[in-house]
Length: 86
Image 1 (cartoon, rainbow, N blue to C red):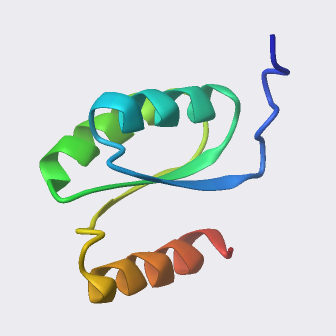
Image 2 (image 1 turned 90 degrees about the horizontal axis):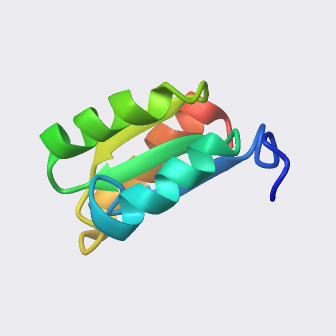
């Protein structure tokens, strides 16, 4: 339905990317060629998900982040820009 590389070169942040809907969305984005940042409060969960997603060929960065904490969100954004440049 979509071009297999529709999102190639795009950087996408998925909060709650370790399980459920967030993981499903991240998986589809990875299949379409996106580079991803997935976040969750539980590092072990997103580390496992990152391994799965990296099989699609894009870059995957797993960052523990509680989006209710502005300082953690700011730190996550800084790390994302540092790794991906955008």
